[in-house]
Image (cartoon, rainbow, N blue to C red):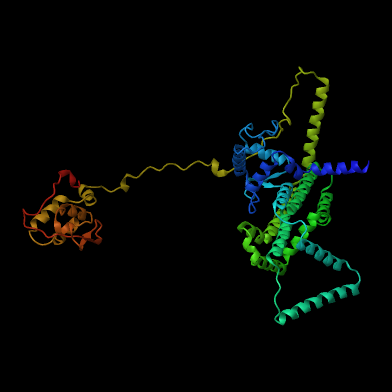
Length: 511
């Protein structure tokens, strides 16, 4: 192959990547705008139902404004605005998952959710970089490159004397600057333009972090699927699969740029002093006068750099924990003998079907029985002999008619309702005094607690009884002879003929 053929193959392979396919379609502006709106800086996962509704609303909005939007059905292709039908969010999300722009997974609660892939994040990062107004070659970018080259050259220097000279030069330079500041000389700070340029370079680097972490997460997920498939196919022993998992995990962190970036970020977050210094440096940069021109979103995004690192590392570690849990479940619950027996049965069924298809025609009928046939298992004893179940129940005893005492009318009256006639007579005979005195004049068998209800009924209508502020003690005697005292309002009795009497029916007295 010539050089141009090699270059053509390489370029075509690059252009076929999901990142560039997302940016090269006629509807790329609409799709990227929907991704940018739904997945904000602080939103990484969106529930499936909410995602479908938001996609429908945003695509319909863009379609109404005349933008070229993707069609819901992949068979119809992308149509111009005005000809495209009403978008279907579920269908669009399914197509974007197939195009490797979205990932559909399960949340810790078991609900389905969507997240952007590394290809979509890379496309969004590239669009953000191209849309920002900055110079491609600036002093801060060149200084960053020179400092990085100098730092790594110092680490790569094998000669001890050369490294000592480098350190002496750095110490002398720093000591001179310290002495100058200690003498009270002017503190030299950069102006706003140079600070703004340095901030732009930093945000370019920070913007690439989510896609880098997502690539590591997707690499772990791919390894997860391959190892689970190896377990199911049983093409290799379990021990060999575990060795391969450990080796690939080590290689993932050492052999790929994303893995090395993840390893470096992980080491950074383990150093509390370095992390605290990073937070302080970010605060110092945002306190510079140039930060007044930053929008609240830019300030919040730059201040959340440490949060981006934490979230990216947590996602990768969660993917690794899920892979480890899957391996543990496969090792604990995997039954090789049972799986092999099932595989042998399925293979025999396939061979039988193939033989029937070769020997028979389209109109032939083959009687099929149940697979597998019913197992011939004898009846097992469910219950053991219990002597108590065979014993005869005891005979029914005849009731003794003498256990109940004879009940007369007086006993019933003692346990019945109030005796209104007797109460009315005693109130009529007591021309003066109070109702409580008249009640206490009754014999013990007529001062039952229930008689207080009859007394209250007869005293209804007396102003001093109904408006009484205090209650007087009424000493009663229960039918069994136990004295009980109750407190109830009382009334002054008027001469006979003056006291009001409520209408009483003869049936009100207890029988």
